[in-house]
Length: 325
Image (cartoon, rainbow, N blue to C red; front, side, top):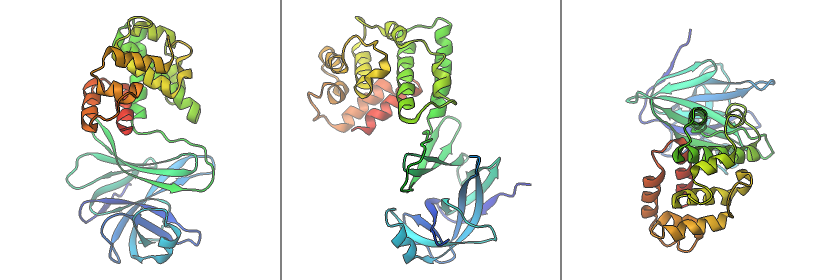
């Protein structure tokens, strides 16, 4: 029988729970100070010797401000507090929650929470990058997955990276749908460009992190070659200025992923996009580098107008561009 954990309090806040070498457990959390005996729900992460991961939900209590936690975890932003388990279960590294919780349950080794006044389910994730662990809290509604809190724990030694951001799953689903549409004869410009971005993204991802059997490799095996996609998109002589900008931007990051199918160099393609559509703030800002003094809000507005609402891969491109402003 699964017994949900509940907790009273105000708007939930999230923090990082870490165990020190001496066995003490610390909570690092931003915001107002916490009094002694403040209730904290923790989601601890465990990895077995064979690589299987699991999560457990454990009640804890704040037992005061901790100078030892502050001295050891000075690289983390936020106030540091010592934690003590409210039961016989030992605390582990993971995420701490302060504030109201309607339900926090662990089902099939995965923690899922619901908070007061919110019908969405919240999930808790951890993955590794090259030198540390990334913790995330994601709000999952019917049409979106939004990461509302993230924390980072630096390990100080090399690890095998396995992080996939939240949009990787819907992007993989879109790749499968686009590949099926292509096989059925849907070779229009929009489908081709979305597949170009998808194929480039998968190639670049595999270079950085290695093949991912759940998405990148298995999906790309069903994709047409880059040369066929570029031809359907208008290459070499009928590419729109916008398509030229997209190709030039991607190629500027990794031209090898175009498999020698580009008609010209990335720099020449970006410059041609600016020449053909000189009124574009986006093309100027990210393309030829001729002018970069435009108002960021105006550039963001054009990114939204051009790329948002055109599927997961254009969303990936739009988010990438916005992050560079």
